[in-house]
View 1 (cartoon, rainbow, N blue to C red):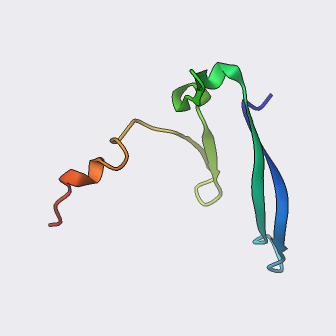
View 2 (tube, rainbow, N blue to C red):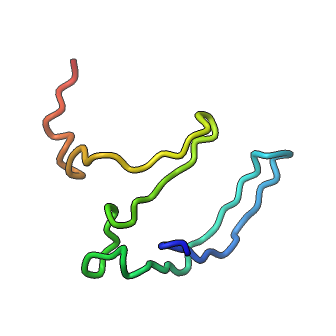
Length: 79
């Protein structure tokens, strides 16, 4: 039921002694529902990803486009 899946190989598991363990993996394959594609690329607006913030105890979605990568910073001038 998930529109996108990543198949991973476990490279390393770091036991930090509690809930903050670290899992390091290698992505070996990806699977995407065709409904989430535009051409052969994942369309972020069709995918509508979300994340869960433990700190805020909220689910968050992707917001508006802020600018084009590698270009938005060209107009930045420090104060």
